[in-house]
Length: 405
Image 1 (cartoon, rainbow, N blue to C red):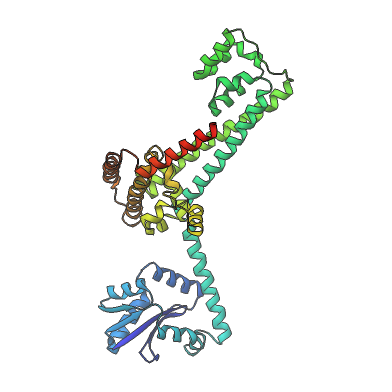
Image 2 (image 1 turned 180 degrees about the horizontal axis):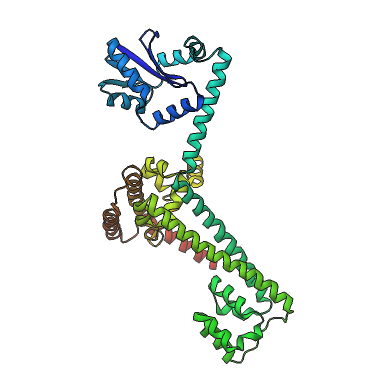
């Protein structure tokens, strides 16, 4: 005999092939408990109602079951049913849902259809709340937020660094040519303040590695071409410099945090491509679970969606890589090798994400070795650019020569 099992807000219902109710296993009457049961069923847990319905169906002689859910089908297989199918959706389940409120009244779950509808809304609300809490508690989503914060902090740092170079450059322009690194420059101007202070020995010692550059300027006896400013002007510039240095420290802390959390949630991904790039991929995919389910071809283009859709719309060449271009093996390689390396890397990323999400086994060392071997093979096979690249380069040179004439 064939039975159709339908999961509803009030319990598990079994129907025959004509749509008649065979058996039922109702959840407790409280909406919160009903939501808890549905949540447990969604996670693959075998709740009491599954055991009750299984026994009743065996007594009825039901030996074939049809479900709409893979998870529910597996739970009944664990209870001993072997002839199990999944048809989503199926006509019997559709029919059951159209009569659900009326059936709730007949079974005594609610006094009226209005009460049944209110109970359904309450169960749906409580179930959604539980799923939202579960989603928020996912560590991979926390690391996605952290890496987005890193991007924003770095953007603020770059804006402040450019502003400070222009601002302090009015007073001491030579310091900007002496120190190219933004962080070193900001730290130096924070220590120096007024340019006349560069001659102070204790201050020069505090400058650390950049001391020699500043000392050369002092020993040369050169005078600054910058304008003189008031102490209050220097004070406000140094205040902004302090904020910029705090942002540098915050950025370091965020990267350390991402490194630690990636070690917890995706150790293989972290070891294969680095914690920050791994976190960026998780953020773009919408979570480690979604990244683990993406094909390698999609992972390869994550972050290049605009370029891809532009190519589809205009017929231009599609992109070869997305955010994974940040991996040194790709951006340091010649252009004609990048697509092949990106494809190889995306394949390994897909494997690492799936292992991290589904099993947790550590296989990063094997993946890195396989990737290293494949990249070496690509670099040896494609040492020289293909003919089309050479021809393109020649045409560019010809156009450049014509322009010079």
